[in-house]
Image (cartoon, rainbow over all chains, first blue to last red; front, top):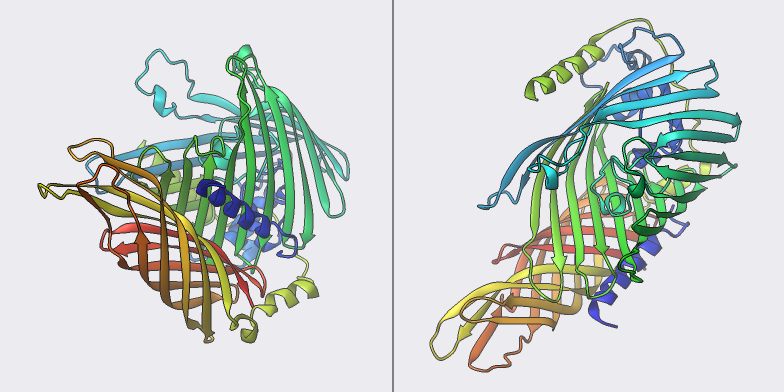
Amino acid sequence: MNFRHQVQSLLGAIAALVLIPQVGSAYPEFISYGYSSCITCHYNSQGNGPLNDYGRALFSTEIASRSVFSNKTSEEDIAAKSGFFGSTELPWWIRPGFKYRGLYFINNPGSQAAVKKYVTMQADFNLALQFDQEAKWLFVGSVGYQPTPAANQNNKEAEDKNLIMRERYFRWQATRKLQVYMGLMDKVYGIRIPDHTAYSRAITGVGQSDQSDGVIAQYYGEKWELTGGYFLGNLVQEAKDLRLQGLSTMFEYDTSEKSRLGTSVMQAKNDYVEKTRFELHSKLGLLKGNSLLTEIGFVKDNPKANPNTKMGGYLMMQGVYLISRGYNVISQMEYYNATLTAASPDQTRWTFGFLMFPMPRMELRTTFVNGRTIQDTSVSKDQWMLQAQMHLSL
Amino acid sequence: MRKFFLILILLTMNRVALAEPQRQRLQQQSPPSAALVARDKGYLVDQGIARGLITVEYNSWFEKLTVTNTATGVDQDSKAEYYGFGLNYEQNFYQPKWGWGIGAGVAMGTAVGGDKSGVLQYFEARVPWTTARLVPRLFYRWNPQTDLGFDMVTIYKTAKWPDTTGGRKILSGAELVAGGFIDLRVRFNAKLELIQSFGMLYKDESTFWRLGLGYRL
C-alpha cells in the first residue's frame, strides 16, 4: 500500500472513530444546544432557507450575543423583537424575510499575486405563507441574487442570470410524523453547513444554487428520521439536457440527546453524465455551544462520452467551540481526492477563525483558509485566503 | 454595493431597537437527562484525563530544498513537501483552568520536492523520511471538554534525497527543526481526544499541519 493510500486510510479511520455511536439545519452545529432536528428552526425540515418564528426567536435569545440589550431586557422581550418588523406582529399567515451574505477576501495575502475582492454571495427575499393556523399547508418562496461565476465574469456572452428563484415549494404535513414537500428546493444529501464552498457541498452538487424541482417526503420516528426525494432538475432555470434527474434519500438516528448519526445516497443523471454520491455523517453535540460535525463521502461522476469507473472521496470535519454567548471559534478541516488514487492530488483545506453573532440577525465570520495540495508530479505552494463575512437575516 | 451594505446594517439595528409587546415566547426546553449530565460531568474528573495519551496523527509540512552543483557551487532553491503519520505518547497535568504536558514520538512518511525547471533541474517523489520529536505544551482549559494550547516542538529529521545524476548535493531544511503550534483538543469522552494543531516551523516559516486522534490509557 503506498503512502497516499495510508493517508487516506488514516483519515478514514479518524472519521470512522468519530462516527462511532459511543461518542456521542443550515446550522447543524446547534445540535450542542439540544436541537438535533432542523425543523425546529426552519420551514424546511432539512434545514437551510427561511427561519420560522421559533428559529428567529432562538437565534436572538440563545445564539446571538445580548450585549446590545440592557440587563433589564428579558429574553422574552428579545425574542419578541425577532420578527421581520421587530415586535410589530404580522398576520399569522404571512412571514417575510431577507437574507444577505457578503464576503470580503484576500487571496494569498502578502504576495505579489494577492487578490482582494468583495462578493455578494446571496441577497434573497423570502416569503412563507401559511394556509391554516397549524401550518399543515405552507408555501415558501425565495427569490434573490446569484453572483456570476468567476469563470464567466469577463464573458459578455455568458447567459448567467443574477436574479434567480432559489426556492418555491409547498409543504404538506400529512400526519404528525409525515411531511411532504413539492416544488423547487434543496436536494436531500449530507450535512447542510453554511459554507457552500466546502468540498462536501461543492463537489457533491448540493451548493448554494443547486436547488431542484421535485418531491420530498420525510417521516419522523421516535429516534430517527427518514427522508426521500425524487428530483427533476430546475425546470425553469436550466436547459432540459442539463437537468439532473434522480433520487436521494437520507436516514438519521439519534444515538443520544445530542448525537445523531446519518447516511445519505444520491443518484442523478442528465444527457451527459451520471452522478452517484454516498456519505456517512455524525452530528455530535458536546457541552453547550461545542459541537463536531463529520461527513465522509464518496463521489462518482460518469460522463457518457468518456465512461469513468473511478470514485472520489471527501472528508469534512467542522468544530464550533463557544467562547461566550454569540462568540465562537470555528475549525473546519477538509480532504478531497477526485479518484482516491495517486493519479489525482490529495487536496486538503483548513479553515480556522471566529464565528460571531454580535447581535440578533447578524453573523460575522473572520477566518483564514489554508489550502494544500499533495501530488507526485509537482510541489504546489499553499493557498491562503483571509475571509471576512457578514450575514444578515432580517 | 457599499451603500446597500450600510442600509442593511441600519435596518438590522432598527429591528433590534424596536420595542413592542411580546409576540412570541420561546418554548421551554426540557432539562438535560441524567445520562447527559453524567456524561458531561465525566470530563470534570481530572483523574480521568490525567492519564497518558497515545496519539496517532497525520502530519504535513514544507521545507526549503536546495540543490547545489558541487563542482561549480551554483545552487537552486525549491520546495519540499512532507507528509506522513506519527505515533506519540503524551502526559498532561491539569490545573483547574490551565495545564501543561510533555509528549514524545516518532513519525514517518514520504516527501515530494524539487523544481523541474531552472539550471539545476531536480525533482523527486516518495522520498522516505523519519522523525523523532519532543513536544512540551501549555494549554488553557477552555471548558471540561476543550483545551486550547501552545506547543513548542523540536524535531530531529532524517530524509535521504537521492541524486541519480551525481555531482549534486541535495539538502532539505535542517536535521534539527523547531517550531510552535496552536493546539486545539476536543474530548469526545474520557478515552478519545481529537487533535487539531497547526503552526510554523523555524526557519523556513513553513506551515505544519497535525491532525490526529488520541486514546487515553
